[in-house]
Length: 85
Image 1 (spheres, rainbow, N blue to C red):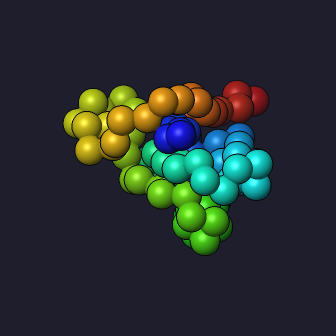
Image 2: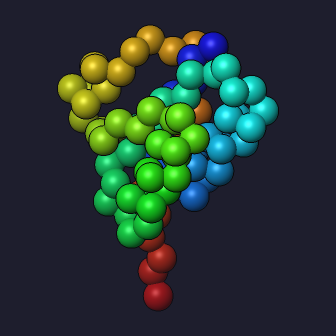
């Protein structure tokens, strides 16, 4: 099975990627992330070590997604979080 997680280097996306990796090591996991959030690079290194293929890209840019392989499942964890005070 091939799985794509958008926002894969964020908290939710990286946690899901790790959980799926632990659940079934045979799943091909791809994570796409724009790496704009502080901490994304740290999660990227951790996911790479787990065998998750991390792709730098933005889901708002169709050309960034064209290079990704076909997958059976997509989990959309991409967000542009903000807190207004």
